Length: 348
Image 1 (tube, helix red, strand yellow):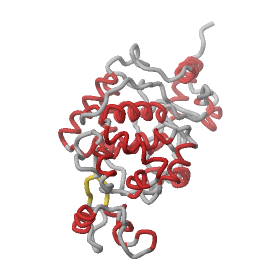
Image 2 (cartoon, one colour):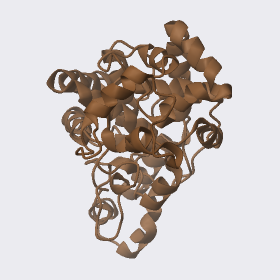
Image 3 (tube, helix red, strand yellow):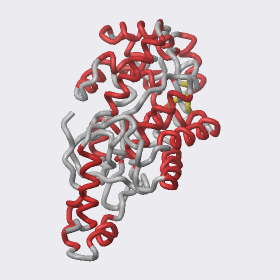
Image 4 (tube, helix red, strand yellow):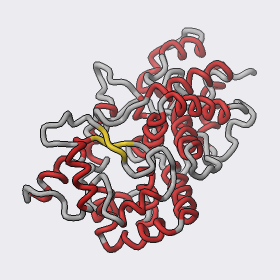
């Protein structure tokens, strides 16, 4: 007796989720997946260099909130508050259209195969490689979430005001070490930050009414000109002296007192993290190695939850339509709770 199309669908989804994440996950189902994403990222870099740095940060903001499941990409709906509007993301994260372009390109060559969660992982890697940083083999095979949780993002994601002690504790919750924290902070080797994120450092650090004493004087004066007290706080400044090149200049700047964000400079002023800042400022190869290790560990973060392969990264699929397609129109009540999308993820 042949299994029903619905049971085949359930089997396919379960098989996709049952194995551990692995390299070359799409080697048979979508062999050009990684090449396709990299080409989109290459074009984005030419069009607007800052965009690839923005896309790289999606991995951080997605994976820390209930695992790497592309919940970050979901647009808000009347019944769901999206993570794009969370405190650490609103008016900050940008370039979502680059992920849209990658998804559209993939849907043309292998529709319904590559998850948005995996696109984020591939695109983050490509952002680094295309700007002079290390290249590495990513582990793939994630599913996309069926919902977003803005409240979880608000509770988890750190503020630019965070200090190193807080960040160490936060990263430890995800089994990320102090070395991982410092290395992954090196993602700020490319891109820009908003004046909004440093106004307190410039004008009222720790409620003193003065600038952060950790600022190197000439750098502080430069930031005063960029971000005067009455400035449009969406004005942006470079996160390090080489914002279009992924290198270890970020760590050299921290040693010199030229960290843009408080959460950056505190890595040098705090003793447990300072030794890694010094190490990476002197040894770019060691930084690259530690960064790749940290990105892989962060990319493995998952939780047990329902999942799917979205056709559009901004919205969940029309499950009722798919149920009708695979069940020949029988007993639609079984769709309640997306039961047929329920998967059991492996530990780890």
